[in-house]
Amino acid sequence: HWFPCFYDKPCDGSEVRVMLSRFYNLLLPNGILIGVLFDALTDKQRGSHIHEKTKARHAWTAGQFRQQIITPLEDIYSIVEYDTLRNGLTFNFVLQKKEA
Image 1: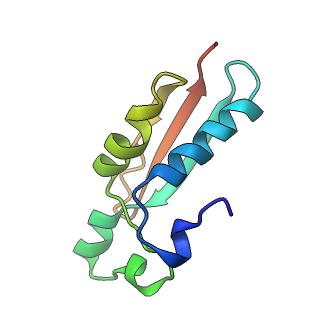
Image 2 (image 1 turned 90 degrees about the horizontal axis):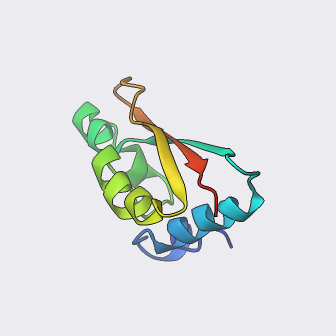
């Protein structure tokens, strides 16, 4: 499983960090990795609580995801863009593979 935390236990983020680390090996030099996730904070503010209605056992705000997932990976990725969508529902990240 890429994400064993999705279905059977709360996700502390370690599985996601491992997955993003594996993508590093697949990217060409200076390759780009892009992601878009639901923002738990705006989701709760809107009253939809989509993360609670799915089988997912985690939800991050943009700040939490950056602190828990992205920051520990800054030795292998450069942050090109982060949380720039400003759409009140999701946040994005654009990472670039650093040269080894």
